[in-house]
Length: 539
Image (cartoon, rainbow, N blue to C red; front, side, top):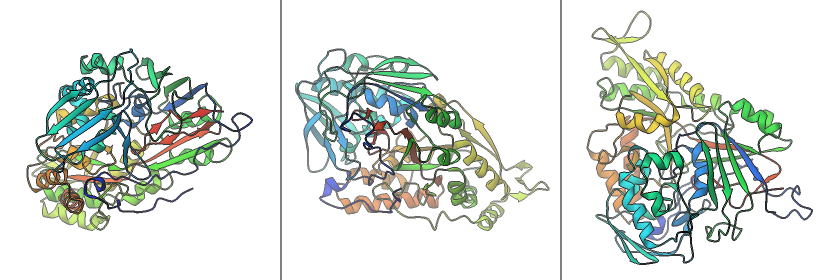
């Protein structure tokens, strides 16, 4: 198994340096082991059955934020660009080339000719324009895509295969954004549907697979797109995908998923937990791992709540959490405790482990200073009101509940009473948008530090109700500058402001761990630690 090295993003020319991401971190890759045909070469045909732990209740790539659903819907759409998971370089996909002006306010993409959607319609610059123009209307579920296009001034179809996107201010993160599933290109007919209809019925894409059936909370079935011939420049196979069919079954219990893999009922499973590692190691199963870049798993704080407006209370929560205990007890082997609000695999990550060291005495002292005194039952109170908080969580990963039960114990030890409230996965975005929460457990994956602006700027969705201030200045500044060193300094400043003010409580880095049978070959992670199945084959 490959260890996970700490690293800093490479520095190069100004804009290209802004677009770097994490090193590919995999263990035990699923290359050929001779179980294919007699020559061991890839072969076409077959069905890959993949068991995932949850369903986000939506099959529109532009609106899905849960990894378990992204695995499937990502296969139905292509993006303008792709991002090399090993180098972070942005490479051609639907766009064969692009031009960026000197201050990163204008991006011109030159589209590949001959690309069609699965309904037969052609990819043109007007279709790209229709997609980007519609993003602001996606509503609560489209917050990622909206953040990527937040300062757009106009999108212009220059000619049938040239599209120009102009921003009101420098927007250095946008090129990387065009490689994400959130800005996957959909047909004009799909774009005209309501966001709700796109979620329930799916969309028409140019991708290597086509949605055939969606049964909410049960399964997603995809079929190979006949005639597909415009894959990412990173893919090894030209033309159509190898596999004929993909079936994603929703199997919430991790033990049942593991058993289904061992018995041959499924070919791959997501979210392999620590408890199932030993049983799956060796034999006919391969474990695949990659650390996710972006905002780590942690507690998103509703900073407008009266109790949580007090920085001392927030800082006490930050100090009371024992991240190493949670990572070692609950999460897969190799998982790292959070050492910043960003995972260590994110460009311009800053090590703030000293600020995130567990210190129960400090937590108690902060709560004392805030006027919260321990009661006879150990729970603190002030003005006759107990210090009680609710953590909202969603069952989209098997580790969520046991991790939060440890958090609950750790906070109780310093006098904070915590109730855990489980919600449906499909309620995640609406919970954040509605603001009816104290703390919420989650993470956001993106191979660019601008994910901090999407998550914490008071000028955007501001789900965590942060006050306007110097954090906004740093977040806006890093998105605007084309100077790599300046961007690094601003991202560093933003991380420190978030952690030191405890606007968020980072807990543990998300490590994606999948398991596949030995007959599955070339199942690859993309730059966001999701999967790409065009090159995957069964033999």
